[in-house]
Length: 422
Ligand SMILES: [Zn+2]
Image (cartoon, rainbow, N blue to C red):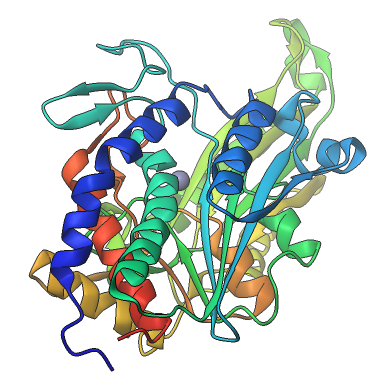
């Protein structure tokens, strides 16, 4: 419609607003929302709520009731679980676009060169826990909308549509009290046309899905005996070792189940990893219980029930009699079609701003995309944001300011196209 749609207008507005965006990023980093256990969520939620309010959004701070959060966030030590949703209606009708980011961060850990909760700026990078994953994503969401609104106002164009921004908790521990809760309670409208999650994609590639996972607990039973007459007992650790050996064989076999375009590339094949083990009461007692937890990562074309059957069959083959198998948690692989309007629009915007065709990836680990795509059935959902995946969760995590600038431009342009202003 407006052929001369001015990238230069977006460019100059981003330049004007970037200091303000970095200031907000520092404020977000300065609230240590480490999860587990989920510290300072209320403080963070009210800060973000106020930011959106001042910008004219109608907002709601969605508190998860205590008894529900105890169930959905058992790691949470009773700390409050809370999410923020903001609505901005522009003009009449038009598409509904949902932008989402999580505000919890993994624990900072030790050995940082800077205070991880200060948002120190050095060499055009902002350092701090959550700088990449993903407080810079939240800032990008907010400012890409602001830049778009300002550009439209200055140019006298009209925006028609609704922006919904959600800032959610607990992504780093599964997201059940975060996006999972919002989806459950109907906060993600069925009328949503497009969903953008601003997790780290280095401002230049697009994540279109993620692998699946099963957490499996195997409990093997034996019979206690004095260590001096171990012959009289049945050692549960010895029995469990049979399963460990068989599962190690399966793990080798899984190397042949390869998926394309997985990020990082090392995670291209399926795996089965023992991650926790618990047995024994004292050094002189033959243990009668051994409990092992396994982490099974699925390739993109595997299914949870088939992978479960395979593992159950292998345990049966050990001929161990007394055991229990429990699936603690499972997520099917998530994959959106590559031909959606959102992916096309975002790709073209990246091409225009970054100057190269974006690559598409599936993430090795699961994330909140599962709730959006699986539980709402909305396929117009992608991940794009300023953070760098490879520094997420690391000591001295940072985000380059240039990435924030790029992603605000890309998202402003994408939104303007989705709103059909150009
Ligand atoms: Zn994240």
